[in-house]
Amino acid sequence: MDEPAAFYGFSRLLYCGDEILCDIAYRILNRKLFAYKTIESEKDYTAICDKVAAMGYDPTYYVYRDAVSQRPYSPYSIQDNPHNILVLQEDGSIKELSEASEIVKALTRADLKEEHKIYYPIEHLANEDVRIKTKTHKDYKESTIWQLSE
Image (cartoon, rainbow, N blue to C red):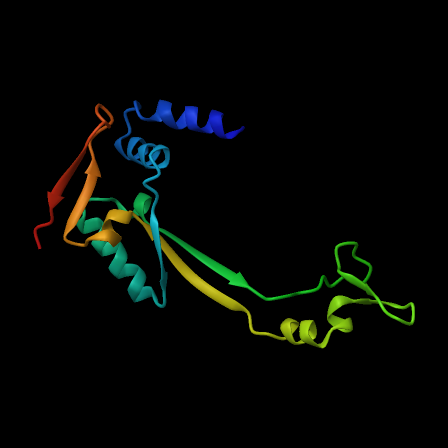
């Protein structure tokens, strides 16, 4: 499936009977993608879910949680793996990159960096006092703005 086929499918979903599916298809087609924020605890996640629910969105569909981890460099564990980076030494020997470079060796010992991100409707990020919710699948030409009653 290529991008035009995917976007055709999303455009067809604008007219389906499922309001949430219509809204998400509208967001994809019109580049109104979800914002993200790095969270530190379960409390942060719960707070965002509560705010999104207060905006009238179902957090089951409008909040996504993801964990991203990264190590600066990690050689493959299998000795003769063709994907390892090998370095030809001046003496003609071949070493894996982390054995040939002290800098890369230090990177292999670096701590694993892990971040927890949460994705949610961007209008929540832009202004917590106002929500922008598109109309139902019958008319996606305009957006309506409602004030939150808090």
